Length: 179
Image (cartoon, rainbow, N blue to C red):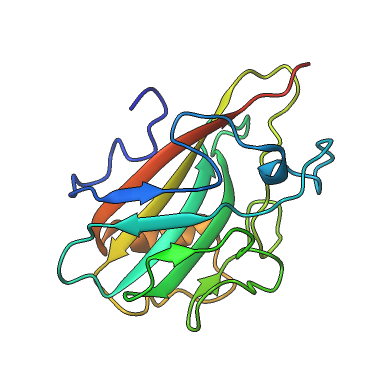
């Protein structure tokens, strides 16, 4: 991966596969995955469909994050964080990350994003800031319950994932808004 790799200082772990019918690795987000909440024309803040396979034996749950390391914040921007997805679930439907988490499986916990909303927040890079990368990551986790309080920040969730990740599947998509 290139500069600002969010996993550069994480332990090397095996990889597995994540795919999406919503977007392909390396492609730009479709309009529905842009942020209407943040005023992007046509944006609908619809979480992408995700499917994964090939996680290692011993996987007890999954977590999903969507993170923009290119946001002009000094700490990136977390768009979506979900943990405690049961190990027998290997797909989330498009729109699962609405404000009610209506498409998430029983037991999964959705955390607030960096806008303070407990839901998926679509892409909204500042106009003229250039292309942003969005790391869609599925983590194979070695515990059933990550043990993170429901009011935790995505960074705290990430800290707990740091020591419990058995494998990681990542695809990177982009967004850019002309200035």
